[in-house]
Length: 546
Image (cartoon, rainbow, N blue to C red; front, side):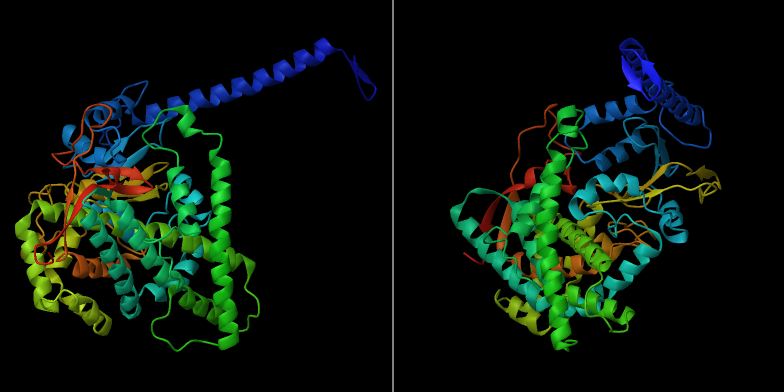
């Protein structure tokens, strides 16, 4: 018997009541799930305004996705699936494809037409799909990062950091970038002497993180020679992200993941917070620096102090917390693009000796045949990077073929994409809108021989408007795209003539498929799109160096 105030309830009554309550909650949950299932399936079923693959009344497009997944290596990046889906179901000319993946994934519309991508990202700019981005970006940076937020908060932080990523300012930082690239050359020379297979992406990642540390934080991380706690915590965070291509519940909902995320965040935010506090104290003591080559962290503080009319003795805690978040985003996004791009540049040039020869000839013409001159000249004249016309074409071609990321937005009521050819209207309400750069980049409606590596196309052909989108376009384009292009050119200037790097074939994936369109160094998901297995490679000194 249980006494509650003036009422007495026996154990059987209490048990029956609790059981009934649990039953009601379960029933309501099941009812909501079934109702949602019916609503989603009904929306896609026989929808004439939504170009899509064959739709199953119970499973939506999950069977279609399973069929595509089985036809490719199991570990490919999800965006690799998309061109094959467009091709298989004759949707390439439509420019959009609707996918009903609920409840396994978010129902979405995928864009493969440059004009409709323009409508979504430039003409109107739909808000970022924060819910879809958070599972990856929140563990790496924390909530409120510039990549996923929208509205006034995003505009404020973009304004704070814009001066640091202006081309004119980035050119003043080239001497520091050169120093990190010289360290990379030293590491690669040692690996060439050893003659062993190395994980190339691991080394290019250390290089690009060193560059980001120098450019953003004015700190020599030196990860190419020794571990750094900030970087080690960051790498751990990436390795613990839930796998996108796994259906193993243990891997998806690993019970230790939240604890690891918390611990790594504590380390990363503690280190960056200390760096930020130190810069703020130095500014208060010494005033505004007159140096041209200021790190991005200093320019951000300058903009912040201008917003406060310079009357700040202590840093606002909200600003401090969010500034740390944005710097973590820069570490993640800033290293990813360039580290993978460098791998693919060497991979494709090793397969095309004529294009490698042309790139080396261009570098000889700019910097002279003495390989040591490139570093010396770039320190004095960073503008020499602008003469690397063919090398820039190589970078653009690699980013076309191997885009590191895409943009995901969220549709709005009343916002329709309009087919420029037919005038058809395509709805976006309650759908994730995926501006998937890869299916645009390999669509032969816009590119001649899109699966071929032809840097010459950037010098000899008319590039279709808005069809090249590795950094996205519009107001939400990547803030660090100019830094990525500058540092990649510096790396090429110092390394292309010194090394021959050849990717080694790796064991097939679990389903026995080891290539995508004849390419064994295909893209896999590791935070962003990266070369499979880190692109195991043999490093050799180029003939002129030996």
